[in-house]
Length: 195
Image (tube, helix red, strand yellow):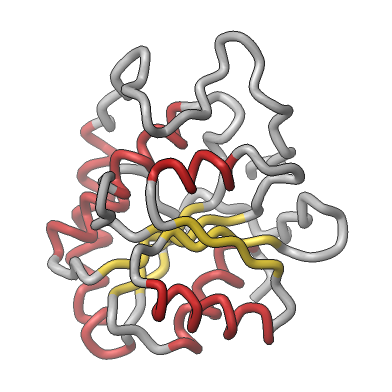
């Protein structure tokens, strides 16, 4: 079981929390076992995506709830370039008691990821105006202090290959657009261990 993630300290020399720059080293490719497991999960999950509007993979989460980094309320970063959709997601989660933050591009992602205390979970779109959400996810997974940060992909890309790519890249969940708000809230709670 994974230990709860602690909020990383502010960047120091050698820390690379700037997602607008190219990484110093390319991320490690997934193992053949990870690719196989992601493909199997994606193939099994696509019918669920079609019928329920969401899919969650919790393979990397323990059964115990992750404690909020700020000590009292979970904080979520919504990475979404559509301001209307972002606002809808923010409103729903604020009503459910979450603290919310929003980023629409790489510079805003940098600002939000360097806030203290750090967020507890990221809802990540894949298609952004100046970035690819899977590449951002890869940078998060490669960073020693952010590697266990829960990330759920929220995207219009819903084929089995798309889902497998997200899960192989290290996503903790995969939610397709359009989605049911109740499904997205359920996905977040499951990944945080508070369902």
